[in-house]
Amino acid sequence: MTTERHSLRSELEALTTEAFRSEFAEIDTLPTLDIARLMNGEDAGVAAAVALRLPEISGAIDAIAARMTRGGRLVYAGAGTAGRLGVLDASECPPTFDTDPGQVVGVIAGGPEALVTSVEGAEDSVDLARKDLDALGIGASDTVVGVSASGRTPYAVAAVEHARALGALTVGLSCNAGSALAAAAEHGIEVVVGPELLTGSTRLKAGTAQKLVLNMLSTITMIRLGKTYGNLMVDVRASNDKLRARSRRIVALATGAGDEEIENALTATGGEVKNAVLVILAGVDGPSAARLLEESGGHLRAALTSAGG
Image 1: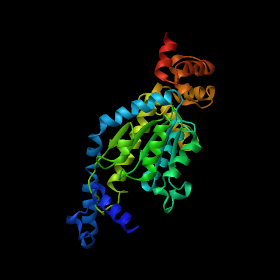
Image 2 (image 1 turned 90 degrees about the vertical axis):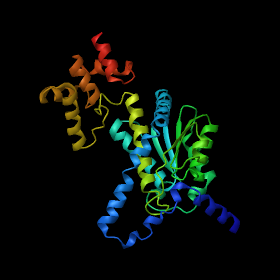
Image 3 (image 1 turned 30 degrees about the horizontal axis):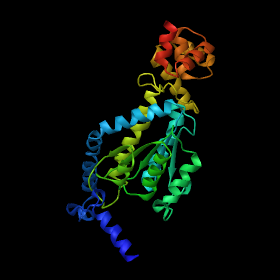
Image 4 (image 1 turned 30 degrees about the vertical axis):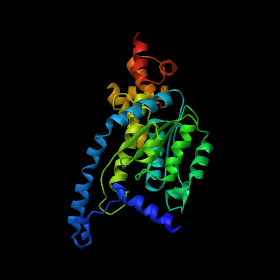
């Protein structure tokens, strides 16, 4: 056991995300404003680190969109902060893009309990990763994105390896170069943000970088799937007063129509924003709008072209 602990310690010490920053060794003696400035300065470089990986990110997105067009799912798998970020990104897709709850999924080592507390040993379990994916029935049409700041987390690596063996598309997102996670995946994305302000606290820069990349993976995939019209969320699910008001505003921005015409269009389409836009711009009724969108695979621009042709 002592040998195993020494080996793991040596492995962690070799990781960029675990490196010690000697210039911050007395950070606890600084005024609060100075610490805030240091943190802000550190965070400023995260977007630039993500920018270096845009070719890999875009390649992964195109592959994900191709699978999802065929009915596949997007599944994030990770432990700790990385797992929570995946669950967060997945949970935002239904209200933003009106996806089915099972279309974008986040699984975290230790299950739902791990969202709010630490589940000891879960991130080290290879068997748990396999069981979690098997419970979802992962297949060749799906995509599994393993997320791990270190790039060595057994749960994330095992999830990617198991998904790939099942024929799924795999993506490995980490914050260290030469990671086992990226090597295990078809699409490796390694956003190297450097050592953290607090040694090894990868919920900081690494967490921010992962959040930015996950935003891109889901958002741009949904754009490719026709879930937007320009930069408007025409598939937004109006489940509360704020979103109902946003729906009306989206229809107004897309069409330039007045309030009465917008209300009539939304009524005719059961509150479906994309359909309402098509009703107004193409001059069709609700059922015709639904048919045109179905024939165009949900792409509003294509439906408008069909209606005009």
